[in-house]
Structure formats: C-alpha cells, structure tokens
Image (cartoon, rainbow, N blue to C red):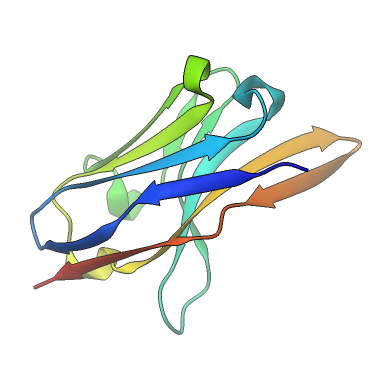
Length: 118
C-alpha cells in the first residue's frame, strides 16, 4: 500500500512563505511523477506543480516564479516551497504520485490546509 504523508501548511499573511513536504512509503523513483494539487472551496482540484522521474518540472501559470517543487531521493520526499503567497493560494493542498504500467495508478496524500490572509 502506497502512502503519501504531507506536512507543512498553515496560516500565513499575504506575501509570506510556506513549505510543504510529502514523504512517500516507496522509493520516489518508483513513480513516473509526483506533484502537488490544490482544491479551493467550490473549485475543482488543480495541478500546482509536478516533477517527473527524470527531474523535469512544470507549474501552473498562476504559481510560476513563486512556487518551487523539489525532491530528496534519499528521503523519499517531495517538497513545495511557496513564496509571495496570495489569498487566492488558499486551498487544501494534496500530494500526488502516479505509476504508469499499462494504466495509470494515482496515489494521494490526506491533504493539508494552506490559508493566506490578506
């Protein structure tokens, strides 16, 4: 059973910074990619940032230049550093990992709340 355990998040004022961590129960190179999604109240879950097995990264346009995704293979952990936070970044953030073998299998963390006050 794959487990993704998130930590970090919390309450911060606009312009501040927060960091999220996602520890995987598998060697993270087992996954095709890992990423962070977020879901604000009344909105669909959206991809925030992702990093592939090969190290390529991609970001939602709304967070480019402010958020950075990274990983530590030795710790089987993926990070999301969030700077210059805005109230519209307020959401529950979910860690995601997937494995693609004939079909895609997605795994999710429990979610962590990020609240940015204006």
